[in-house]
View 1 (cartoon, helix red, strand yellow):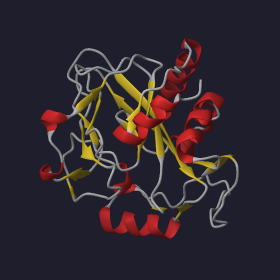
View 2 (view 1 turned 120 degrees about the horizontal axis):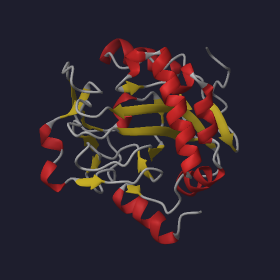
View 3 (view 1 turned 135 degrees about the vertical axis):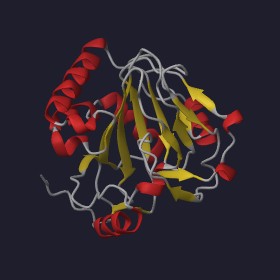
View 4 (view 1 turned 120 degrees about the vertical axis):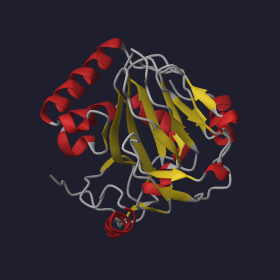
Length: 254
């Protein structure tokens, strides 16, 4: 299930790719059951759970999928650290919007590098608020200007300035349940609210190379300065290879 040379070239050129590999139905059913269990315990995560693994390590099993790790290795190298997994659940009829943003705006990594695997747990369509990308917007490898928004109808509260993207040129990422995309940390993206009658659940896995550091002091500072989620107490997991920096802390945290 490795990425072809053509798909690797597309990832580098466009900032994202949809691989041929997809999850089997039994794995999707298990993820849905895990998510239902999570919401029973933590109903406040109805729209967005930023730290899945802090609440339920069952979700770690899906990040161990060797087919997924093989593809991630092709784009970030053999040393792979899972530093986050989250769940964006857009319930039918009133699922929240995710504003245009870059993932790296929120994250305490140095140097900034991550391949995000976005798993479609339900069919993701334009109608129910699928992701949309600005193709190639990752190429200059820089963070664009963002502002803080207090809109209660947003899942995230850092949004790109309107001067940084063109909604008319956005590419919708429509996926069938079980399909996935891989995208770069600098890629501009967002999604619309879900006003349809169909849920649009998506799970993310964030993999950084072993040449990057998960900076817990920086995480505390970003939380203080920007009001973003405090990542400083997060457990990170070495999935393959080794930590080339010698600075990453893999101790389990509850």
